[in-house]
Amino acid sequence: LDGAEKVKLYWNVNHDESSVKFALRVQATGWVGFGISAGTGNMVGSDVVMGWVKDGKGYLQDRYADSKSLPSLDSSQDWHLLESSEENGFTTLSFHRKFYTCDTKDNKIEDGSVRVVYSYHDTKDPDISDDSTFLYHSARGSRTLILLNVHKKKPQLPAQLSHFDLRHNLTIPSRLTSYMCKPFEFPQPASKHHIVKYMPLINSKNLGRVHHMLVYGCHSSFPRSNLSHVGECTDKNMPPAIQRCSGAAPIAAWAIGGEDFYYPEHVGLAFGDGHGPRYVVLEIHYDNPQNDLGVYDDSGIRFFFTNKTRQFDAGILWAGWAPISAMVIPPRQEEWTSIGYCPSNCTRLSSLPDKGINIFAGMEHTHLQGIKVWTRHVRDGKELPEIIREEHYDFNYQEFQVLRNEVHVKPGDDIIQMCKYQTKNKNYPVVGGLGTTEEMCMSFLLYYPQVDLAKC
Image (cartoon, rainbow, N blue to C red; front, side):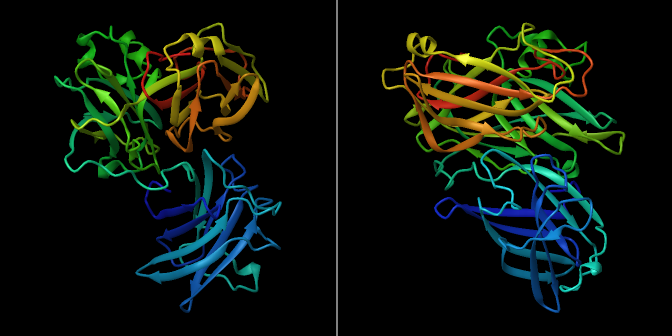
């Protein structure tokens, strides 16, 4: 959870029992804490568990952070200790909790991004009967994770797999935050192949600096002469074709805390023989809080593929409001809602097959002002269950969510994209556009079978 990797979290989801089993391992011998925030990433408002190991015995307490002080003990103890240990300077606690407990002081564990919090004391355990013995934390922090929207079981991969890498080769800028872009030419085999998995490749010296990565598919008109460029994605000297591609249609995404992405066993992302993108842009968000100089990085993403193609080609549908300047969000707004429509006539008159398409994963996307994003599904005027939701949208954590159940979209269905923004810190309107300081409202939906419908 932290850049120094002193705090590690592991979890398993049991959808049948609506519960999550967590294991928290901290490089400390004092008390440790973990919790689900109210969506802000702040400690106040968080539903937390605090535990420790003393004289070989593990302790765990369900608490609620209602102020900037020691969280209060919850009258309903809904976090349950399973195992505990303290060895070689590490404290490990295993515990579980229901998604929803009916306790008003417990925050729900929800689909989409969840902002978790952590804290610990390096050496001191408290007395279980005396809150005054809880010493002030040695460190604390927060991290955004996707806890629930993952594969129930990892899909089985073909026995014979090949791979190719897209990696940066640069010096990380000596400032807090930077977005670096580099274009690549995708492999172009003579026959169709399927990408079935991708994984992050993080330089071991930069585990705390590589924040998230995105690979965008570019338009077929992308000039090959731009392949030699690398630099800040929004720099004025960056070629326009790279700027247009960055922030457009992602085909891969990873953020801190994320794992490898697997396509379903019957679906693959096609490339070769005229399929898939020819050119892509790798964007990496770097954090360099110490402004270190001369830090080299070669992080990137590895794509695994096979020539044994699967039953279906995956498609990517960009649904929502295109990033155009007609989109205007007024300044100083607590909340402002924008709505993008993929109407029934689009899905009816497009190349959707009679049986429709099946959405298996998706990623919501706005820029810096977005705070909540969700995708609605309507058929014959009747509202169906939402396709995907980000109740606590975090621009700095973007990953595809694997849907628990595939969503079937028929010709004539409406897809409605909803985005809420906050501009309290803005003195001027925010307009639509591809730039990070501009805005957009969209969802990238992974589906099969692929059809000739990329945007709606």
